[in-house]
Image (tube, helix red, strand yellow):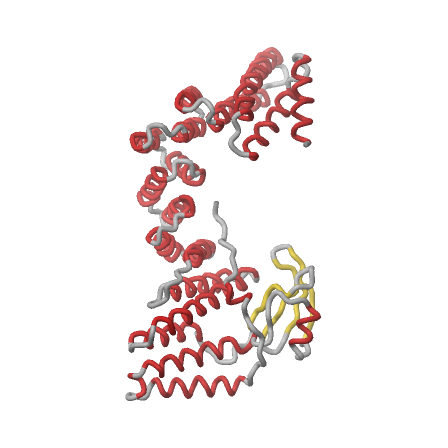
Length: 433
């Protein structure tokens, strides 16, 4: 599943409010620390670069020094004495917010009256303050600053970047969000930081895809893999989409083949692989060859046959699909998903019959009746595997899906035999619980 990993860093929730200082004072502090870093003698001392980094982060934090996310409007009014320049109602991602414009920031209160978003509109000092702070801390460490002094500061900067990224994401500025996520990721692996932010690496790639920067997305998805962060195999599916966006079909196939071997149950990998082979007019049986390699390593894994069955279902080779599902059930006759797959084949056959029936001329009523009789048989054939799926359901979601299909199928069959009406009432009551 492609989605942003949503988690605010602790830096946001642990922020302590303090009085905002005049911008000129912050600029003076940065200028003084920068001048020291440019002095040949002082530049050799770790303390000089630690002071410069601190000047940058202090200037960065100043516009929101007396603003703490998570507080209500009454508390905000007590903590922040500045009168808003304007107040308006805006909609963000379908949700209403009350927006207050202040001298250095816009603040957004959600429907519950809680401060949810803080957007800096006027930095106290211009420039990439967090990026420069990271460089300064890295230089300090290079000159002998202790790990225990630099490590938490880099973690703090990574958190600042990360929370800013979510602010831009919520405001719909994906390009800026991507840059901030990248800053968070990079800061978290700058020596000697020990708190690598895997979510930041993933979100960098995710937002890069959204703004169609496929090179950056590919770079950071590959960094996710290098970090051992696979997102249950979704990284491989996303990398394949980046490759296809760059018209690199071979790379897309390689990503999906690797991902399928490691994560044979991943729906995104399977879907992308099937679509890719169909688009390139290649034999989907090649996917089965990849599965065969996985079967050698995991001969007792029925899910591999479930995947194989889905491949054949996707290309409407229903006989091979059923054969694959049956092989999975031969390994484990209680494997719910192979029963689900068999039932799904019946539904797909039913869809094909309905499509054929709808295409008939009104005068072809005999042919219509023949197809309708076949449709009834198909619906009946789906009942037993769905019942087995429900009986052996490994999760509430699977059982609920099977029950819902049984309700609908028996409703369709209620005029064929009274037993189907009784079955419909049973499953309808169960679904309604």
